[in-house]
Image 1 (cartoon, helix red, strand yellow):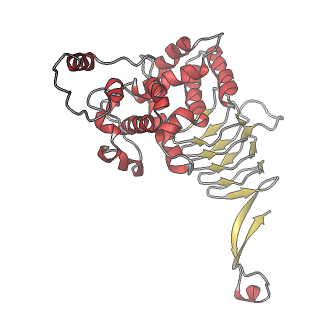
Image 2 (spheres, one colour):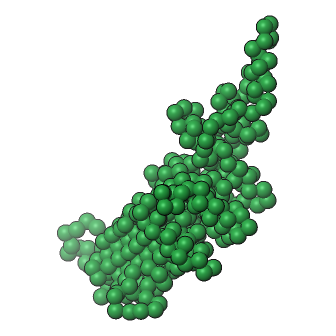
Image 3 (tube, one colour):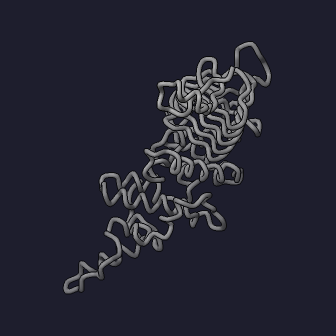
Length: 335
């Protein structure tokens, strides 16, 4: 996208070039920002003046009324301006991906389309498809809410995430998840060939193979996301977190409803496989490398192959007097 000055900026520049003209009054931002930031948003480039900075500690980012004034979106715009000030060579990229767009869903539609486009199906075709679901006449408000919750989940749970703009632009777990939400919508309304096409592109570009029929709640984080495989009848609740190389699959001996069902607030470590039509209770934690083959109670911690529940066993004074260990407690697997 070319960076085009506004008509007002051109008039001001033309007047300043006339012989004897007085220099223009100092602007709140540089000439570059006066071109790329819509009037009224220039104050967002100043971190100290940004009234939404403190809202990172508030959940959820409510977006009521005008989506262009959504606090989450305004925060992302502010961060994009600061990044451009620090790295001017990224100015064109920040403009085309964030600053040129009025709303979060509009920007995400363009960003996903650019990522997914190829010779077989160019970006403009993807843009028409994705925009119709996120911002057009077929828009799904559930998806729009989930997008904000997913971004907030990354910002609050991932210690490596320093700002929302980075998560929006570069985190393939977020981008792959939102593309899946579009594929799931297509699958739900009967456009299954297109949903399959989108699933294939998500797998190729983002390294996540999620069946379009899989149901995923809001506030979900896929950290790193590489190697994630989620089967057709899997269900994931709200506010769950996943690391890389996670499989929610079948045992290979079943048909029909054959994949795991995860409750809310479930944490799944790297390299975990959860197999079969089993329920993982809300608040459960699955340790890295575990293979889960049976039901998991709510709040339980599971580790090992096959995974077993771990409890916090407190030793008695008599046990401690004969134990060389200085620890007052142990983790004991339940058979």
